[in-house]
Length: 141
Image (cartoon, rainbow, N blue to C red; front, side):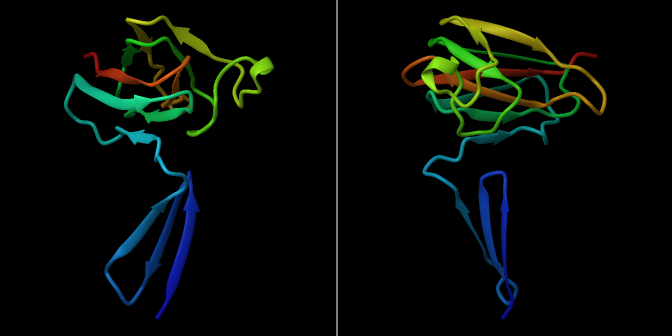
């Protein structure tokens, strides 16, 4: 019997080589990474439920040319950091202090850069409370 343990981006995977079952245990009670890299139909509309003041990470597909996102709640967002971190002012003790915001009941359209150095990760939190995050992933011709 041969066992493997891998920890990568908040995912802990245990695999036993004599069995075909892989048990995945997520670090923390809420896995907060949403990977849309395999999207091949556009536009793709998604709703991430129950976003809080702890960052959810959205990973966008390479051929996405823009993403629009918003909520009924005010949002803070950035593209540097990790899922599970907090975003806000340094006086509040937040993990990430460089961010932008989207006012409540608005959508923000973020054009995406092309090329190998484009950052395809988006971290989003609510300014306070809990709300659903609405995404529209777009690919222009």
